[in-house]
Image (tube, rainbow, N blue to C red; front, top):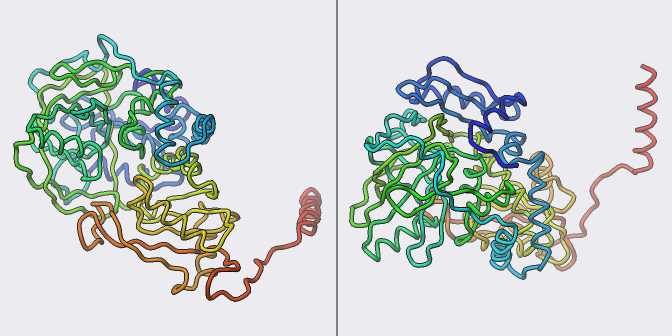
Length: 484
């Protein structure tokens, strides 16, 4: 299901009881964060919030729209994100790939075959209103936490093109507002947008950039999804919504943006301009990330819908809205992991692990040290390279139940034998690493040990009740309950 606009999605949330409207005037500086944080940490992620009156701006602000499993499914137009995973699994099985890279190459081909390629149109609602003299202060941009360096755009769709191939990238990189016409562009070194920028620096050419906000909620999810370099996020969005994304050309450059989005910031990054210190920012790690040098984005024009809604989020101590976006990505892309690792049963990134800190994966173990093979393989797959800790458990463990995971972890490991320490790339936002973007990693084999694995005594059986007794007692208790 495709939404015609962000307002269409808001109406859907309202109709199914997933929206709270806040009619009182609230300041985007800190006050929205305090209300949203309480909502995000309420049972099942609370509700989406529409702040109808934002101090200093004519535009309403939507937040926590993705902040539950139900709202994630609604945002992607399905009853359950597993529906998308099943369709993706079916596409990949039409010609089984032999590697992770080949799987994503096949995904790109499948998107084309499913008519997901974006469709260029002559005009779009995103250009109904044109602000020739751009002024970012007109938008209800949030200052999220007290020690943040300023206001930050937190759900931007940053659109760039490879200057050599013309391939489009849609990334999500926070943008600290410097003044009414300038922001920082926080594209981390490992991101595709940063690669495009480095190439423009080599060419000594001004880099055109467009930033879209709002539109069909699937766009923000696609921008945050762990797609590899070269797979068009807007094509992936078209695959999910089962309708090509209509795109319209910007007015000041040749980039294209979703025609139904709410705001467009058109501008450029100048590779000849020196980097300056961006941050600090209260990040998804739950800590403030310190200032680091990043380039500046210069806004030349702002266009928007007449009925535009500004979209934002806030990150911090988990659980928060981004946890549900990350969980949806894991569920949807699990078939891709299984193409390379058919032994994988399930995978979870617990909220407390803030994405990259902890991965729990269950496997069908079939040979000695199988868990070690899976650890090394996952560290070599795209953004999984940032994973700080990987815990491998047996196939019968529910990886989404941390009590069960911790039970197996504590029961099944000998620290010296079952813990693997190595080094590799790390999330640049991880303050615990000894160097920026590089640190150590830990793999833990919490599986039952089998013959052929060193230093293992005969492995005992897990205590379980006889199935016939369980069924008999189920029936007995059911009869007892009926009598009451």
